[in-house]
Length: 374
Ligand SMILES: [Zn+2]
Image (cartoon, rainbow, N blue to C red; front, side, top):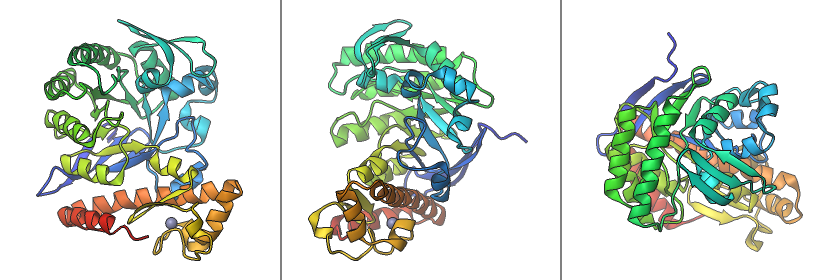
């Protein structure tokens, strides 16, 4: 039986909204809750697909805005789609470019059918709307395509948030009617800024259109933590239990735990890879700069007790040395460790929900982060 698009909920936590499940996609199953490393330019920075597989990465995120500008859809089409182009055979989710258009591109002109903007690379005029975003994602051949939406700034007025949300809903409806790649799923995105009623209304209207999954978007755009949390709560409250839920761009481990407790299944964030390139390591106790002078003579691994390739072969002193002299291997080793930590973290969460001890796991996590040892 072709299970593509099916979302099986396996266990539900008795004390929170947390659940484990399997999302079946055209390129295989994804166990949830899941973290998706970001491969903006058809590459998770510094990692080969073989390394990602060995780290148990089950799904990656690719980027419509960036891939459309470079290398361009003619190249990706000629190479047989994004999976073949980048040599990755597991699932891929592509974002629609909305977030980048509103955060990166210059001189935007918002029209009813999309957005005209200047490319951040060469300033050339580009147009992206629901029809274009879905066409690009169809050529990319992603397993999950996101609708094209407007991502308003977090400090916008209620009027602006409302108009923007209405436009996003109209665009979502248009996206849902566009042709898709074989087996491609399409997720709607709940917007509505910091306004509870708008978030709820947006979620209800998207559910009315009917999507394969739902994302909470327009979060982690510089707003305070409590606003982020309310945005999640309001969005999730109106979403159907039986479809996967994705919190876009939120990746601090404490935030992921909170969101899982609210019933979120999917996450993406540049944090583990970006922090690695800045010389910082995530551990069970938090995050610390391996690059700092304190690690000069430290013969311990990056994280004590970690089973990753980096920690089982090298000392902090060595990794710090590589980072300080600008050797590429340094940021590769730290990226391996950080992704291993994130994948391990998600596996622990799934295990805790499965075993019925998610609440205890959360308490233990909070206590550990407070202790802050390295
Ligand atoms: Zn490690």
